[in-house]
Length: 602
Image 1 (cartoon, rainbow, N blue to C red):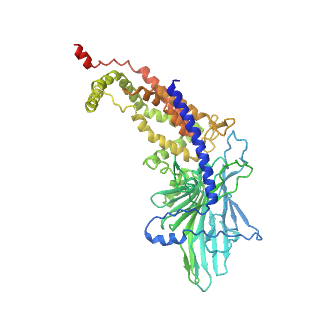
Image 2: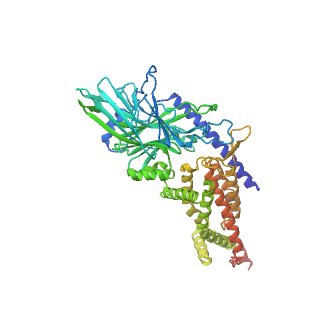
Image 3: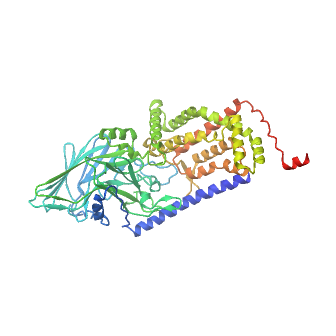
């Protein structure tokens, strides 16, 4: 390796180390901030000014959490319908947790010394402070939160009578496809009006599945749909995350919507607690809440405290006249973010429920990213179902298919770049002849391109056309629950980095597949002919530019690194085959250039 290569490699290693240190330092800073500023708040509203009065009324107020009477024992009711186990609680009169029987709790990495009990299943709303459909307000009108819990023919019922004559009744009806149909009745049984303040109807709390699923706070968050697009607030956004040195203001609450909340969700990377009201809710409110540590897992010194995002519908104050009742109906989905399932439910309710997959929000600047992500996900599942192969092999097969589709374009580009390389002497001669006339130089260069039927953009076109596919692949792999826990070769989980061990004496992970990806990119760059006329120093930098990608993609999912590595190897093979089958290019006729010195000599 020459001096330029050594410099570039050293810089990449330094940048990668600094990035890990910066992320750790920032997480610790935000943990200290949130510990000392628990009421930091940002209010966001949408829509006309008619809703501003309601937003202002709730701004700065924290609804009183029910104080459960510890002398009253908690009643739990557990119902299983085959695919999920639902646990209802009398404290809050709601759904305490949902256990998904088909999904393991977490996928422990092979290099981890401390392993989570993998016999457990994925649980939603686990360790959350409030159950699903708990109702809170800022004056405790709804009482202490202790309900009477009973089993019904189709599910469960929670009831509570208050001293002011208000009776709360919640009915839960279990259904298929991880759906729970709920109805809530608020009935004023007294002869006097009952004024209710603004209430929060809890949807659930987004929590990580295990200690390996935190994802820098980017996976857990609150999401809602207004009929046209989604808004997503992750734990990282509450903590003031950003790109590079650009950081937002830390906050502990988010408020949005203006009678247009079609559905809202508390979600992590692969699972969601999602609520679909019969009529659009007034607003959505989400806040950071502390979570207890994972059981049987030794805490990491200096690591930020665990936090989740509690999401709730926010309804305005209402007065119930004598003997008046108020009914609200909400359908809950508590299950995996599996695209085909969500698409069917979304079509049934006509509410674009599949957008909880975030296909279109990861790259908002790219309009068709969601389209390619959906197509690639459907193709991967089809190959998996048809060939009965693992998902790792399905990714390899899709990569091969994509490479075959783009083969003619890439081959034509390679031939064009080879012809461009042969024009280097003529290009240099033109630069010397017209070095004082840039406009003339450009004109002559394009005449030379047209004469030899080449294009300076030929090397960029294949990459530009394939970038949408890459964006789609990244989005698909990041969102596909099918890859969670999928094995391939030494990879234990295609949705996470393929960490084999921690480098001794450090907390830096050794990820093999990104290193293979970087090596293949480096090999590919050395096979690519440089652009004619490019400065030699720039050529060396471009050859080692793939190492920059290694820095940014080192901690990405192994599924993405697998796709890129296989694609690089196929490109290398194609480049070599194209060169073998291409006849030797005839040397171009050199351009005669008379310098002032030669003219004087004549």
